[in-house]
Image (cartoon, rainbow, N blue to C red; front, side):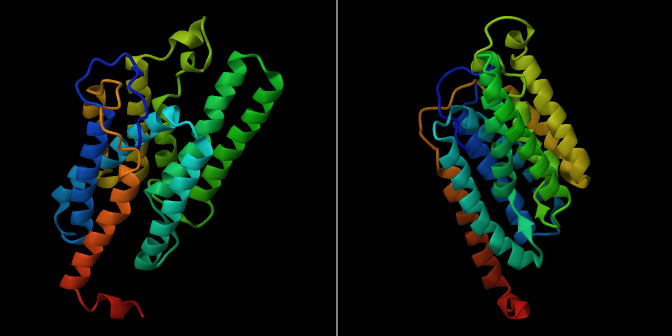
Length: 262
């Protein structure tokens, strides 16, 4: 997930850049999926991996804020997600939407929400009505897909909304210059909203997902900067690549698995 700017975003004074958080999330995801695919009885690997999704959610939300082409960003996530989810659906024997589908729904909520804030700041009533409708449609559609469509979406509606919490109270960046709304967003309120989102995810998923709340620690150390390297597409390459590598290793260790599917 990309953080596209070097600008401060939440008055952070930490030591971790967006790039470091992103790389850490990929490493944690690799540990998690290694446990899931190759060592399913080693619970410790899955516990460590619970920190991956929250870190991706955080850096994804930052990327949504800074990306210029919103539609291309969403379509890219959706396209990769449909491909990886199709493979996962075959493996699981059910229609499954992986984390990229989850985050594509997140972006469908984030972008009209941000546009609504901008319209409200400029007192454009017609645009406000339009973006409020699109926001309601995105939230309602996400709830339907996650809860009533029969498709198993990774982390459910709580996972969809987690990236939304990152900048939920950020009004100043969208044109509010005075009043309570312009001063709501700061390091403390950002962490509070994200922490509440983590609790919601842990409750919704249950089990060892409770350990995801520890992701708040590296997020607290975020310095609000992207980092020097441009890793915009790193995750979109790493995600399917590491799954393919782990699946290849699994098939080598379990050569009869493919024949059991047919």
